[in-house]
Length: 163
Ligand SMILES: Cc1cc2nc3c(=O)[nH]c(=O)nc-3n(C[C@H](O)[C@H](O)[C@H](O)COP(=O)(O)O)c2cc1C
Image (cartoon, rainbow, N blue to C red; front, top):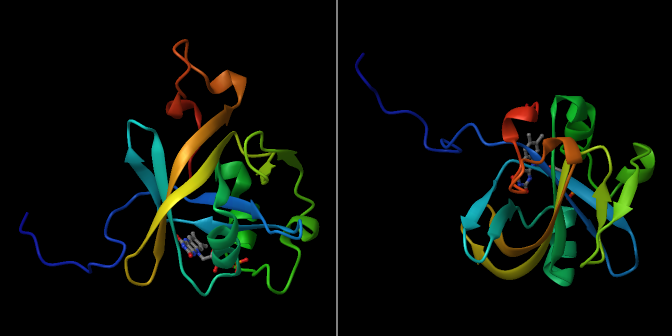
């Protein structure tokens, strides 16, 4: 089959939607849905997330340098939609959705209990790429549901029902 030029925007697909959660300096929790998220270093383990500066979450991460990447499954669809369409500027999103949280160990941030994997991250750099600022972060701790773990401690992604 012949190939033709396609649109460039967000051409790298599929990428899983994650929910990035954080806490501001006054103790308010917030989270947003993020499609721009990927590994960016094997050693040391690092990942990056892209957040547009107009997001309420952007200012929190920029100030605290800390966030949690919560991996999501099909069961988290309603939360993904809500966190991706409502702003923390207008609502307390955790309260509105009755989100159960657990505390991260190494950073001051909430982890979403219903998500099967929660990754604690500390920002070490950021790059303004264009529409997004890529926050480059060290992975400090990975909390994974026991049934998803392989013997070597890695996550068996085939067991996660990604969207
Ligand atoms: C599937 C999906 C993917 C999204 N990906 C991103 C993203 O990568 N970066 C971003 O800044 N916003 C992204 N958004 C939009 C934000 O999640 C949305 O604007 C959110 O309401 C911002 O919340 P906040 O203002 O509380 O930070 C995405 C939304 C959806 C539904």
